[in-house]
Length: 235
Image (tube, rainbow, N blue to C red; front, side):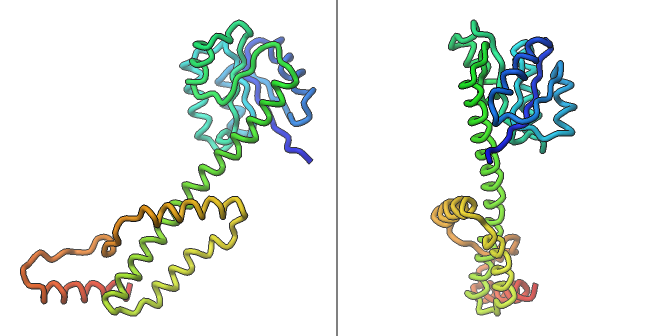
């Protein structure tokens, strides 16, 4: 069973909206097609529905289109959508195409619409969806890895200071339990990130926010460090 892509068409011209909707019916991977007259109506529709492909007419200014795409990509319902600008055939000149891509569009659709071009749009939507989901997953895994590495540094520091690490080592294990639930895709992302994190990690330092002693007595400095380590071991 193939994935269906729900679609929003933002086009003030009724006949143009109908042409797009009619064309999408020839491609089984297009699902529901919602039509609105302008970008403000598009914003309202996106608040209530998760959409996969958003067709935006070339009639709107580049500034207005760019702002809309940027805002929508930051919403839950629009964050994985592929944004496609609908252009006239005569707008195929390289400079025009480049300008439209710079507003943040993921793809372009030129009139008249062919089945092949619409099939490519659904392939684009699937790719965009996958890439954006992976980007969010990578960011989340990086946050987890940073916390784990800090905990590793803490355990290593306590060991160096000959402080019991049982409780902190247990916490470290608990922090890694989330990786057990990863599917193959997430495991591949994790493997790449963890290797990069450890290969490029800076030299381990004592835990954050430790008070420092700059006096001349190494004996006093050692005592202060031992007291701090003991408190960390208790925390």
